[in-house]
Length: 130
Image (cartoon, rainbow, N blue to C red; front, side, top):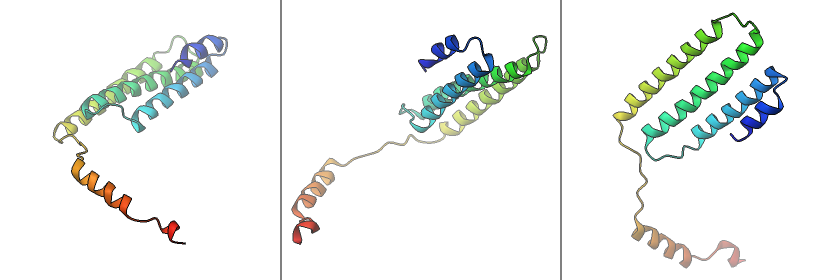
């Protein structure tokens, strides 16, 4: 994410390349937030991921704007507003779906884990039998 101002500054004379690189960075950040969700509470994670998706959508609209190259057209604005509405509806649907689920928490029985560790230490390795 730190590369966005660098790309914006260095590619200022080439807006199509600039928007493609910025969108690529934003897509990478969004995919990383989906694949490696950093928060335990799933609802908060959904909000963070969907706001990052909004950033991706807005930069993708920037690509469309540079390709269209019509300063008097309101079409990119309409597309952006429509995409924002779709992502916000997606977020609300996801949050309503998650509200009915119990949180997934990994429970570890330390006594059972200690027994398994002792049993594993007592068993000889098959490679040592040769």
